[in-house]
Image (cartoon, rainbow over all chains, first blue to last red; front, top):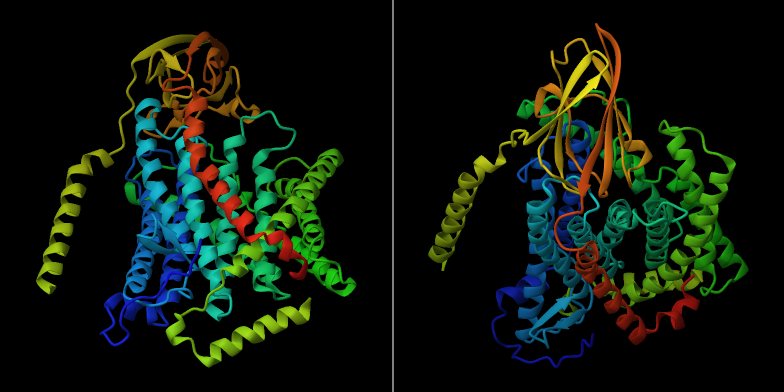
Length: 404
Length: 183
């Protein structure tokens, strides 16, 4: 991952288009937000598609929800590819790309490309999505249409989209010294929290004492909550992420059944008989008590700072608190959504599962936050970093140090 | 240069239009094809069970149709499926119209998870009263395609690659050494 390539070329020559684009202060936020918009489209597309299968039924490859899901991945992939090409061209034109937006550039294929880490990962996710799309096409020729969500090619597809979402978190985290960077972290983390547990459906068939999808939700939501908090380093980050997740859940709750019904009307298809009043499929699986978990995590972080606990144990304590709240909340949540009331044994089991998973999530989150902070770059290239943004960056660092 | 860009855009638009037009017929919803039927006597009602694939294979997406001899009007009922590997919540459902064949009851894009012997029980209420009957000993063969272990291994390559990449980054950057100052 060395980034110390010698800068070659002449400064006197006319800067190329790639160099001009890379030096423009708007390139970073525009590209990052395009990737985020793509991943957000994929999220809304899959929630709509799942609800379509539940509420209406008939399926082809060319439904609008599929189009939304696939276009989202394509948009994220094309934006990432553009940024990799711009970084490569800028580096070849003799410009230092060490502070390129999107994370520190990584040498790809022996230095043929210089890919900012975030865009490398989001672009790889989009490319893998295409490959698994082909595998999925073959799978359907053997098995017929989407009978299950958790077929191997589907899981491959979903993991690929998750990679694009991970890439978007890295891209924004790299610009955490800017307002758009922090806003992007707070938006892109909830997208990943909603999406990533779907992939744990792959373990659904294993005879485990706790539903692996629930454990996946606890792990990813706790991990990402703490990761965002420690990466940005502000006291209110966890609460802001949780509030954003809640807002996203509300919008999906309204959007998914609405879109399924409107699309059914438009295509002249009736809704299924005996639908009942089940809550929307994907949104109802998002933890609804995340604000409580975030409050618990924030309180524990505050306590850690007051007591001077080391960063070696504090994240695990935060994780245990947050994870236990999320674990405990699942049986309560399903009772709220119409299932039978939880037994005390179930509450105890889920709290314990949350506690253990949360400790692991806290441990991983802290270390990943260190790596993400390492990859911090300014929102613009070194050529146009202003004194103001440098001062801003040092002020942020100072406030983080002060908070230790 | 501009001419070249314009030509490129035109060519891309033409290609897109061609693909859209040629794939339009595929966008239509497939009709429900019944290739095999079985009869079940549920009290006073005779139900013809239709399968879109025969013989049945595990994990294969199927359309089932359940057609009472004199139509579904004025009738209601429940279907109970029994077989290996079925989740409890998927065992019993109300008899609902097939979404692509509204004149009969049915299940669309449904897969039976494991090979073995399956049964379909119908509880039907109508003008002639209540009737119950079971279609027994429906044999479901092994799943088509390569063994699942191979398919899962192929699909596990990206996450394993990601973990390996992360492990390398972790070893090089040693985040554990700097985590103490994080909080």
